[in-house]
Length: 308
Image 1 (cartoon, rainbow, N blue to C red):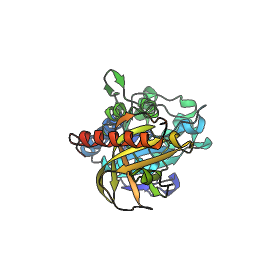
Image 2: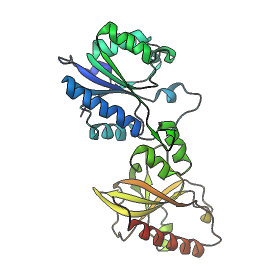
Image 3: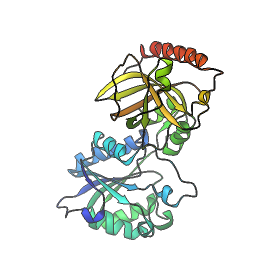
Image 4: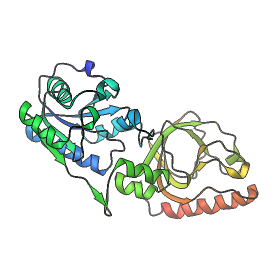
């Protein structure tokens, strides 16, 4: 997939494009529906499938509260490529961009820069200064400038609309299975294995301590897949502050089952499958050790029915 990170990087396009526009944070089932519509329309119209996304997220730039992102921009781009996008344009969201009128956004970016023939967006898409433009306005501009608009209906699961904001809420509350239902896959973070203080080793359960750029880390004890060097391993992950030892430093520690290798400095991915329990304080390390033994046995039994 070709990636452009500024409008100024765009070459002259000798072809017409089919363009999906959105933040696409999480690439959840609603986003996937938009991207399937993009692929279908691009193929039918013999157009190049592009996406236009933003960094930082507009709410991160203007919102009263700084939102946390479900994915890093690198994870988002990797997911877009897997979903068939050929070219991605990441527009830096800044004050100048935010002050573009709806007409200028359409004329300067969609028409002049991207030569759109088809635009695919979600039903609630808004654009232009103050988010004043809506789907009706986009249709009017489409008739004026000669492109079609496809507004994709929202996806619902168990009566609730799939949205990035709801997934963020689930993850912050440790509800990784509810998040999976809306993402269409387990929630995943990635990072680097770093040196810890060997508490797990002293208890008989060595752990990989993980430093990650991901902004949302569910807290508690989880059954996880650990992805190391392209392979997935069953694992048990504790996310929290290790209160038994009087610590308040936030850590992500993964015990990979039946895994004896040292992997300091290695990139690792964690897929959160199921929450076992909340993190809690134990009166002494031996009671903690006994609980970890029970957690590991529960994880082993659980993995008998889990596919990677």
